[in-house]
Image 1: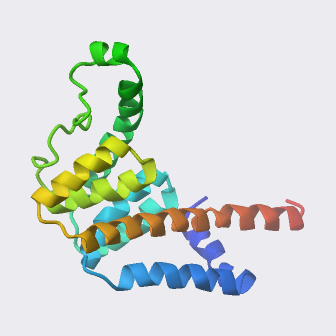
Image 2: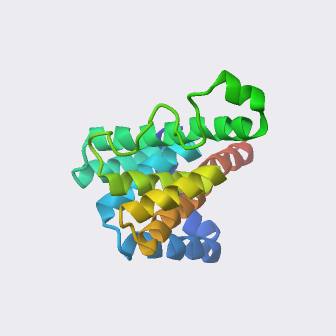
Length: 198
């Protein structure tokens, strides 16, 4: 489905389910319009999280917002790469923890290493603070316990406050909810197709 068509179908939600949709919008608006993180920081985090949720609409929507805010493509790509790294870490952490054989076969994948991004400090376009906040947000979705412990330590070392972490996680929650909402366009499209006999 084309982005414009999806936007048009999503425009029907307030009419079809006014109260539940308003609750979703209130939740989402509170996250985007308030807080300690800048709009630009939230958009970079949103791009990272959208790559974890695999929501094409969310990627398009937040890329457009980021571009409008003047955020470079390099920053957005770096955010997406952090997501890829954490997603690669998920099965490795799980297997590594469960199997002595894996520890012997992959000795370079120690528990404190994020695959193919060994140091969250030396990527280039994003600040260490934003990289860590992205990692918190994405890990909120993939839930790697060992990584969470590592991120807490990194946050302490980088003087990242709890409100910043909480807000990054709320951006992840908003994207998770937004991804589900965006898929209702497919539901509406299919339902209307059946009604019209297409």
